[in-house]
Image (cartoon, rainbow, N blue to C red; front, top):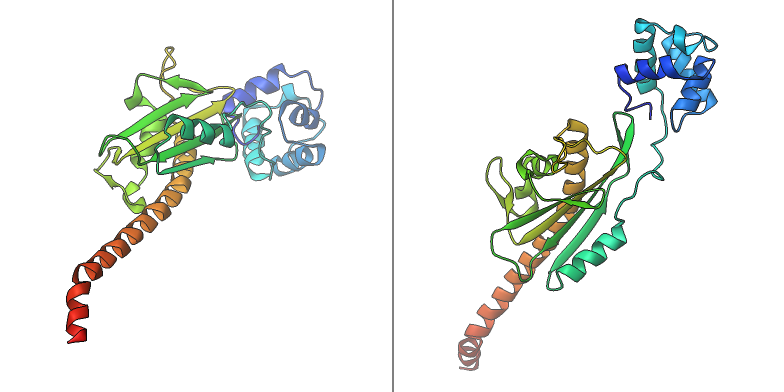
Amino acid sequence: HPYGVEFGILQRMLASTSSRTLVSFITNEFSSVGNQTAKEMCKIAKLDESMKPQQVDRDQTEKLLNAMQKVKVQRPPTDCLSPIGKEELEKSLKKEYPTAEFVIVRSRDPDVYRGFPFQIEIGIVYGGEMKEDTIELIRIANRVPLLYQAGACATTEAVKETDWKRYGLSQSTNSLPSGKMVLVINMSSVWVPFVSESKEAIAPYPDIVKEMKLALQDAGRELSRYLSGKRRAGEQKRRILIFERYSTEVAEALAA
């Protein structure tokens, strides 16, 4: 996708393409780009549409790269991704945690990293038969659970950077929130950037962490509404209990 391609990758693509013109190169080698969009990119970059891609020098490559970021292009297609799916993830969480008070699942629109589309899905399970003041973070990449190196993972960083106090949970500085909650984060991509060959943690690149945080904030707002309603219901119940406690004395006093 043109929004995520880097300078070095674009250079290699220009040198190795079989396309004969710059317009056909942009149209053939990038997703979501039509003929008119390719011509607009060439116009902004002030490059000849009919020039051979192999003739594009370093300065012209940089101009073309900048032009690609300025032209409006559709989001990348998701047919190459294999996400869990909102319904399936929600059904799985409800089955795994049958006593949970609240379950919310959110799925972000696909975004781009280094020219490859990726998609973030998250799920929050709150309450029920869980240990008090603990949060369980389940990290997944392309439906495969990540078991080790949690501290180096983008998912952990995204959770720590999210202000959970705004959503009714307690949280210390630069740490995971506290509460009876299970948090699931899944990244679907044709190229997941792992921190090492063991593939146990997702590299915390800004674009990926940002998408994870946006998904967490979206679900966090729903959790906040649930917790606020729960608190209001609790306060109402306490008020009723107070009235019930003194109802006999009040009735007798009124009768007298």
